[in-house]
Amino acid sequence: MYTDSDICVGRSLTLTFATFVHMIDNPTINHLPENGIVDLQTGLIVNYATVTTVEGLIYLFKHSLPSDKSDLVILRPDNEIGIKDHDTLIVIIKRKKDTVCFYRNPWGVEEDTEHYKEAGREHPMQILERTFNTSGIIFIKPEDSMVLQGSQKCEDIAECKQRLNPIDVCLAEKELGACVTWNEYYIDKVKTWLTDFPEEFEFGPIIEGIKAELVGIDSSVVFGDDSFQTLAEYGARRWSHSPLVPYQMIREIFEAIPSDISDVELQLVTNAYDMFMRDMDDGFAPNLEQTRIFLRDAIGYKMIQSDTPDRLCHLMSGYLESSCGEFIVDITMILISCKIRLNERIAGKRKLDDDSHDDDVKVLKRPTSFIDI
Figure 1 (cartoon, rainbow, N blue to C red):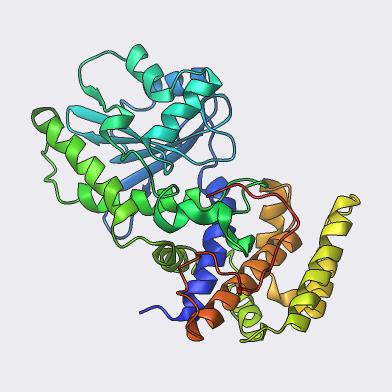
Figure 2: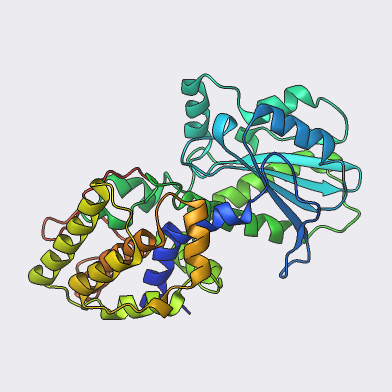
């Protein structure tokens, strides 16, 4: 059972830390690591790689995938074959003689198709089908493995562009956003589905049934119990136990935020954030000292050096343009936004996961551009 605090902390991790981990968990580009990783829950061998070029995609299929070292291979298209600032998946499952390959975009089929059409580029699944027209590899078209409108374009999520307090909509103007966590959630569901099949199972005889199952899995992520609040619960379970997450500090920051934040307190947050962003605009790389000043002036929280793991800041400086300090500030702003909604829910104004318009709702605006999740 997740508490309101768990949901808010999970939401902050879903929208910030997932981006960071995406880059750490997929370290190889255009080739697979020598060995996959054993999934502790399912016992499956899973391997990951980022694919950035057409040549890299073809090379990987030609030289790496015939190996039987992995049950599940996850490829994340990027650069010239992917979608800028957005996470998509090519999933390959190997069983005996058959290999089945399918695709997933949390936007859904319609927007995925429209993107590649407008970009004038060939879809990575079309490239694979055209290049590897051989027996033993079954390519499932995107329209046969996904729903039309995906998890980032339905229900609460479709209203993100209209939120009055859009702090936690998405920080994807920096890198990626909640799309990473939507796809991690999807991968977990695929793993669970796969373990129901016997080891001697082959895909060929029941491929139509597999297509229906994949659409069903995607549909369960979109229309099932997976509201944005549930995604936050998943974020807490997925990211909170990482050795890179300063989880105790995040929890303490959340507790330091006033439960019923007043207009004066909200103005302190806005002023502190404006000052932090002004330093960024002036070309200063936001360091931990600036972050300490922000936390002190915004919510009265005193951050000490030991709060932030050295490994987190070291790795972040290598994987993201934004610094460790900016990461903490982003998480804090999401926590503040979530606590405002939490108080409104307690006061009976609206649900925690209901971001519909309300003229009386206090506005907490972030002076940067957002794209929808």
